[in-house]
Length: 244
Image (cartoon, rainbow, N blue to C red; front, side):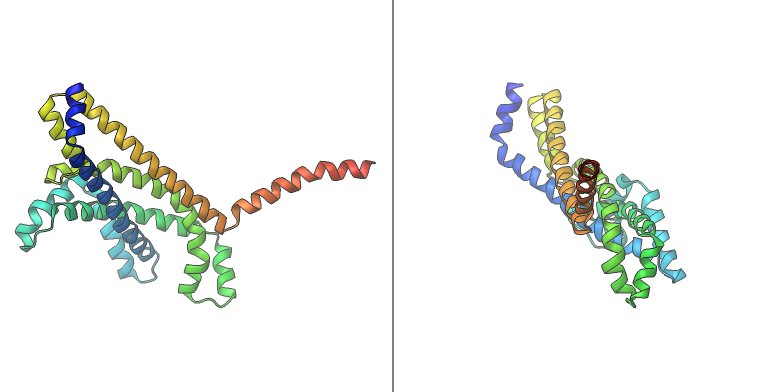
């Protein structure tokens, strides 16, 4: 155990660099997945059959194939097919974005469909354009419902980043694996990885919880709940006053 931690401290700059690569892959992959989620999710609700068909085909393909195979295909097969080679980290970001973007599109589609029909009708009655209606009325309500599911996808994406070491990306998994090979401390090495990934996942969960609270606050959900509590607490006092 002492050999592992002494080597860990000696290689701390490399550990920090590997941790940064893991965070970078998570953030960039999640950003790409979020953009793709909205693009495919909104396209799924299009009135045009062709647009809906393309969206459904893309979603089913990337949901129905393995992320492991998608990652290897981008890194090993695509250069032979197209003659164009992506950097290992970019391959990981694209693979994560395509795979989790396909899952995220179903979250977007389901959240938009769950907005009450009366909200659509009220926006139409106010003579809002479809774009204005979606941006000002539908998406703010749907976004609150999307955040918990997006949080789960984000944590899953983070937990998939160790796959990057399979395509020679010097992420956290790669660095810890190298230290393990040098020291032979398998148990301590993987316990360290578990602890680091737990801290990262917990930090992301806290950030997403803050985002969810902010989204609810914009809709006045917290304010409404507090007002309801105040009205209920005041009710007995009013009744008692009337009795007097």
